[in-house]
Image 1 (cartoon, rainbow, N blue to C red):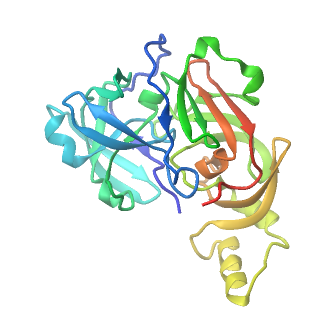
Image 2: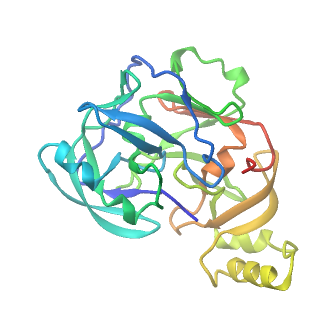
Length: 303
């Protein structure tokens, strides 16, 4: 199942310029479900003092808040369209509030979008009231260490790249639908041509690829009882909308096992999601437009 992959059609501009490094938040514990079928969820605080839990989503161009928070956001600016794998919804644009992580105020864009998150996300207890997007994240160097269970904000001017694994040059999408989300130039998880590949922590599976890549790699992967094999066959042939489980893949020279992928959109089919990223020490050096991946396991995190 795919989660918070958000594509905003906005008439406003986000703050996309590279930023001067400011005070950094302290280490944040990573919730246990992150990378295990769930998302990275962190506790933020509004300038008004209200605390809220938010998903960290590199696939979201702009920060999204639940519509219940609208009365705290000031003057309504205009309506917009929120697009995700669950379809389109009508959202509303407001001036961005102040966000704090611990005692540190986060940098971000000038606006946020509100929508009914109960229609876009599964039910959480306690509830999730927002999605922290690239308008904020791109100002920081963020490291996700799933083995240690920590999310760290690092000083991008004083990294030690030798210990961070393989480096990938990041660029930010410039089209209206995806503008600002991070891309790398590489083949998809199941091989093929070098393409723009989206790095999306809001995708809760390993990622998406072209349908032809799934069919090519599914040969010989039918196993289990008759019902399981039949469901697998239907997914491979795109007769049902569900992820396809595969024994593994080789990507960028590393071997991975137990891969679950879906079909990506025709214009941008290759996405890498959180379940795959969680097999690594992940460092997003957004100010210097570099991502580092250091493989820590071949299979997914144990539930």
